[in-house]
Image (cartoon, rainbow, N blue to C red; front, side, top):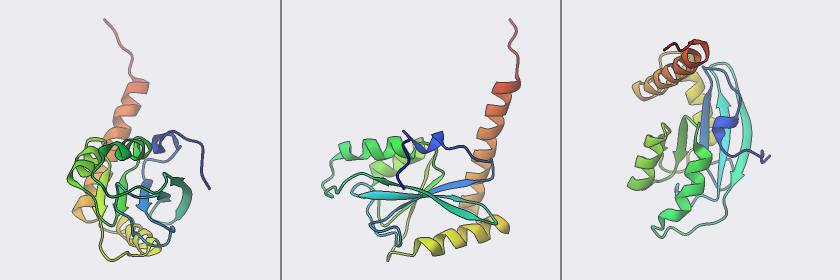
Length: 155
């Protein structure tokens, strides 16, 4: 499924949802370098459930250091909380972090399903520090949006 959206931030969601993208050639294994990934598979993950949302295809890219290929991927990932990839360069890492997207590099092509299950377990229990930081950032962002909607400005 390929949803017609400009970026992940357009998806409706609940504050506790994690929106997680996986750089994968087939949707089964995390086996792609971020910059040359042909596709990302997006999931909504909660403590008690997970759902595949969509696949976003970018076409096959070479691992050549050309930064232009990052732009459409970064633009689409705005609003995502976490992106898993097989490898990632320093520039892409910095750009994702500036968008408040946490990059996770994993080795040896772990199963997407296993990573989803691990995230669910952490959400249901005590999350590791990096995941706790993501959840705190989401809560702050949610509170800021609520304040903007509720506050009246006076001069």
